[in-house]
Image (cartoon, rainbow, N blue to C red; front, top):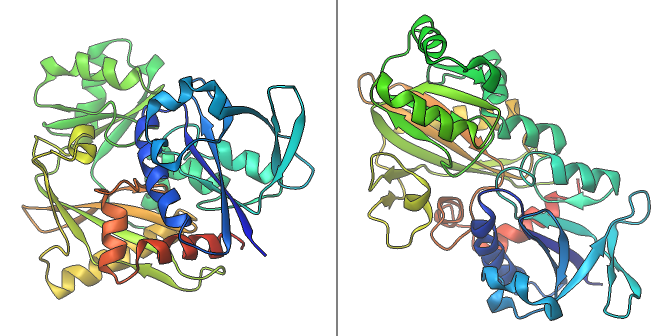
Amino acid sequence: MSTQVCLLCGGRSSEHEISLVSASHILHLLRKIPAVTVQVLLIDKKGAFFEYQGPDENLADERIFSKSELLSDVYFKPGEKAGYWTENQEGRLSFRPVDIFFPVLHGRYGEDGTVQSLFELMNASYVGCKVLSSALMMDKEAARRIFSESGIPMTPAVSLLKREALELAAVEKRIAAAGLHYPLFVKPANAGSSVGITKVHKAEELTEALLLAFSHDEKILIEEGVEGREIELAVLQMDPEGRELLASRPGEIIPGREFYDYEDKYDAGSSSRILIPADLSKDKLEELHDIALRAFCAGGCRGLARVDFFIRSSDEKVLLNEINTMPGFTPISMYPKLIENAGISGQDLVEILLRQSLS
């Protein structure tokens, strides 16, 4: 009997286009699994859901949203069997049962507990973190509190709400009170892929950085910059019960810009480089593995996550940067490359994710 998998992609976040590319790659992998049938739901930038009935190879093309003949309106009715209803051109409704939802949604309105809440209302199985852990890991300030209580080292930072940042002098006072030193990174608390982030070298650059960060979120973080190496690990839950967690060998990012920004991450022509595995001592590998797994568990994560670190040059101290609960799955993304380096193919990876989603 075939397993009905529903892939969701697009979405309202600033990572809408990357979601389509990630989903296209995952759809290609899912098509290789004999016992799986795939349906695709597109979410436009306003948040409307559509069933996509076009060619797989066009999924990553934003222009599909203008092809009304390939799209059907979608409706949900929580409380009944997991799935959704579609409406055809004649206004007839058809029910599509779903065994597993696979949300390939990056950033807000997809990786932050919102769509996970919809799945919970439908009593549906789905890939990835549950509602609370999705929300906590998406909110960088809330995540920092969880990690701090677990004794996991992070970079020094302060958080600000928009109403607290009306005067630049007040912001500068908060920065000084926290003992932060330039350069600083000003970032939205709820965003991904380095969207809305500015590296600030002096106080005169703060205003523009604050305006950019607050254009993406009502809450921001101001973090002390770390001079050092950027390291990422992939964590994968290997079994439905979560007793076996795999932490990959670390990968290292050599940014092609001043920091690893959105263009560096997703532009295939970027000058950044990725080293897999990173050249690290045995002791440092063990330390990174330990902290990655502790952070994954402290955050209540499920299924998969990419755990990002800095190794500070001055003292070799490992500092947790953040956890990404639905990392990029594009052909050049770090997470699938790290898992492949661990000996797990792309097809095996999605099969593992489908199996553990039934827990």
